[in-house]
Amino acid sequence: MTLPILFACLAGVLVGVSRQVNGRLSLSTSPLIASFWNHIVGFVALSILGLSIGGLIPEGAADAPWHAYLGGSIGVVFVAAGSWLIARIGAVNTALLVIGGQMVSGVALDVLQGVSAGLLASVLGVTLILVGMALTQRRR
Amino acid sequence: MTTPSAPRLNPLHLLAAFGTGGLLTLMVHFNGELGRYGNALFSSWAAHGTGTVAALVLLAILYPWRARNAGAKPHAPLWAYLGGISGAITVMLTSFAVNSPLALSGTLALGLAGQVIFSIVADRWGLFGLPMRRSDRRDLAAMVLILAGSALIILFGRGNA
Image 1 (cartoon, rainbow over the protein chains, first blue to last red):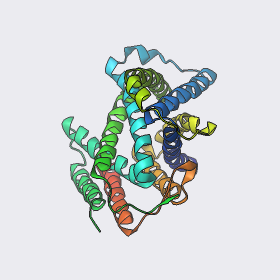
Image 2 (cartoon, chains in turn yellow, green; image 1 turned 90 degrees about the horizontal axis):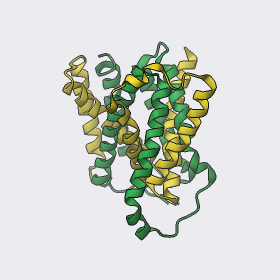
Image 3 (tube, rainbow over the protein chains, first blue to last red; image 1 turned 45 degrees about the vertical axis):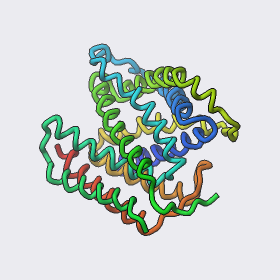
Image 4 (cartoon, helix red, strand yellow; image 1 turned 45 degrees about the horizontal axis):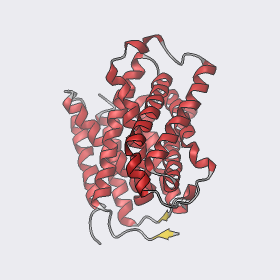
């Protein structure tokens, strides 16, 4: 059980590392160029991995609807936005506000899809996040 | 180059960051769907491939605007081009953790903790060539509220669904 815990924490750390590194690249280039390099380098790395362990292109892949392939294009804007933001509002603010936006929009997506399990906890969670965000807007 | 913590966050930046989180929800939703037809590795590989093409298309569209605004910028060190490696490792670690007893909710919650702790360290010492920033007590209060709300949603809201 120790290994999965370690891996899960490390995955979070690496999300931060890649945003930090892409942010640095965007200072010398542009957020969109940083996002391009992030994607092409990741693509090459995953190609090498997939070719060495096999199963890179699974059988079911052809059956996926076209919209399932939209994630990559959204990711380009996501990485570019993160690189742009981190140089302006810092790593902590970027991480917290992106997490807040992800959580609130995730709950909204659940509600739109008619998922109502855990709704009370979700509504309470959204409230806490919005109050936290408002706090960053309060003048001293 | 230490930046004293700003009097308050620019509301535009706040909205942009919040909207970026919304993009992440959509991205995870689509990549997750692709992963169900194939597997996690294929989903991430395909997303990086289509993303590379999408970035090239966007760069081509924006090229005239960029050419006008190009100015002298500091040279980027080689490692700054390797952010994608970090992302590729994240995919592997996450797919391993999700398939352990931690499941999705535990993986998300721990990942969030790792991300926030790293961001505090990164701001404090200005890691990877970005400016240093110090957090004050109000920043910490906002952090506690946002993290508590996220934990509630992950552990008792969405994650339990």
